[in-house]
Length: 305
Image (cartoon, rainbow, N blue to C red):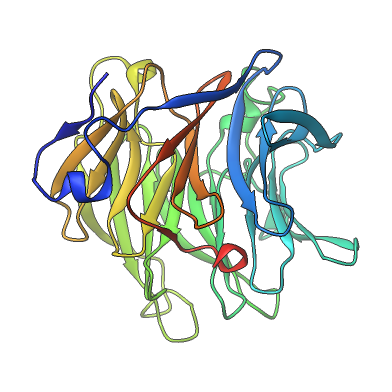
């Protein structure tokens, strides 16, 4: 299975014959949210329906945390705390290095969040997350009605205040920051777009109000959502965007030009860089964890820089 180059620069990022290596499979329900832990040289990832966070290290998989309130995405903040998106009850949890924990966000204006899905942190302490309704379905959580009448993107300010960035999404999913942390990127699984939001110096939405951002890329789907659609979203050190899509992972330049597609044999839910030099891309299929050696480093997670 060869990777597809739409532009010659794609193979500067991913070699044409770079193999997608299965490194763990079997016994998983539905895996998501891979995150490299540089301190232990291991990869953490969520198994959502099983309500467990697993650890992959040197080819061995073990349980790291159970239960997890049906955890989804994981990331680190600049202080080394682990941030966890949880579906039931919905919230974003912070686990500090000393083991203490707190819920950073669970409600908006007195109503429960839908089901926080993906999360990213800026070095100034700002935390951004998407809030689709997925965790309120029997497939990905517990079936129950929404309390919010929208699906949005939020920011938790360093002082704990919650800011709504955009409320016009159908299924907001993956998000990431540009290498300079001045731009927030968010994708929508149904609208099949990636949007960009310029951030103020303090990390808030530029202009201080709910906005639509600008469309960076669109049309990231075909007739069958299970062939691939916008889900995971990451940035490399050059500002290129990597987004789950039909056939694997679509790679875009910062200007939104598709450079190529990293081929995968199944729907890729999410992915993240890791390894000793942060050039190994770990990808989650539904029930298989893959590894791909790239020619570029990932960007955007303070705890892995």
